[in-house]
Image (cartoon, rainbow, N blue to C red; front, side, top):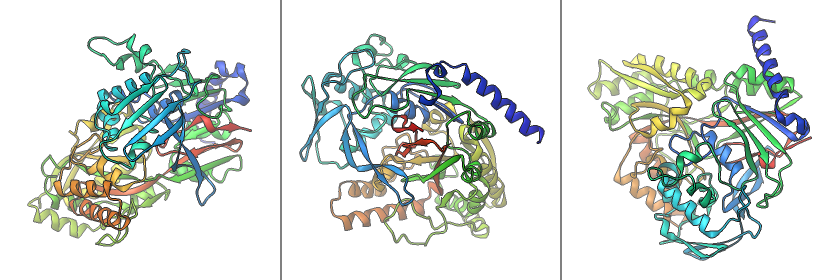
Length: 531
């Protein structure tokens, strides 16, 4: 045994002792789920500024939405959500017309404090989503929900959404993590003149009615969730308590899982996922992330990235296969080396770029930068296990064409805030559209409204017309043509350079069942069970 391995096991043993002291053990280990991940939630409300992706997992389990989705099975026998099967969550009945969605709330839907859920709470929650701006507002705008007045209180238990025009995404939007339902009076009690929507209070407190409630929350360390016995918006969870801890060390997370000290490890490094998959005591589910890509983004408002030849040169200089081999250990789908002209409506798909240093050098010279440039490449440190080696490889490869890159490691708690400011010249980021409609993906990352996920600040009227035509096109053949034209323009203009489509790896003890992949790429504890 090496000293490094001893250190890992010593750390794991200390972690196990801490878990043993946790109140969950008094309730019985069999009904307590112990989960670890590299990062954890930095807030309890996904509508607050700077909320990280882990907050989606917290709010998904702590709050209700009007609807949820059924399940389907992939070719490997794994469970996934089914976007074609919306089902009621807080709503027990749904009626639709071409331009209205009407939701009848459950009689027994209550918040954690015992107050009943009312249509007024639902309307206020959507008004708050607009006030939050950023992701919560942009998600509704993507579904043609443009103003709070579209939500109409019919009576105490009925809320109606009036649409100016039909939109296929409107129903789907009612089940995403950012449209959570708040107890309005509870939040208003903590609002101030400077903060009328109570964002500062909900950052570390909850006002929901979901399947779980917070027992303890220590940002950067742990969150403990206790089952809500009064929950009626779905099947009662089998797990009484969830202890979710942040363990930055991948080696420690792996040791804890292999020893049986924890039950589930979210998103282990690709190498660990590959090796743990052959352990008979464990199972590793690796699901290709729908409508998702890891990319290198170039801010087109900053010189010299306003020059498309420079962007194309960088696209030809990237070490694509090396990144997949060295940083992903092969656990990703390549998004490079495709045909020069788009021939398929599938998304994501391979771009025409591949590593070609000679061609990259010529493009740099043609752009007037034969002597090279200096820039900064930023990445999310909370995903350093893949981002850091990938960025080091990019740095090394770009140096061959005179692009001298300094690496900027941004802490995970600050990542979303930083890229939303649109001040990062180069960034590697992962984006996954919550629903697998290509036009929805493109609206988010290439759309002229320049929303938070358009990290390249790319605005082009021709692209906007293609996105808009595809969004509202009801002719399948015309929709395919619009999508393929979008892809071709994105590849030609190269504000974002696709690297790969990642897998979502989740490792767990063999006795854990019920796991399903969700579009938000986080864990739904409500459906898990322990043998």
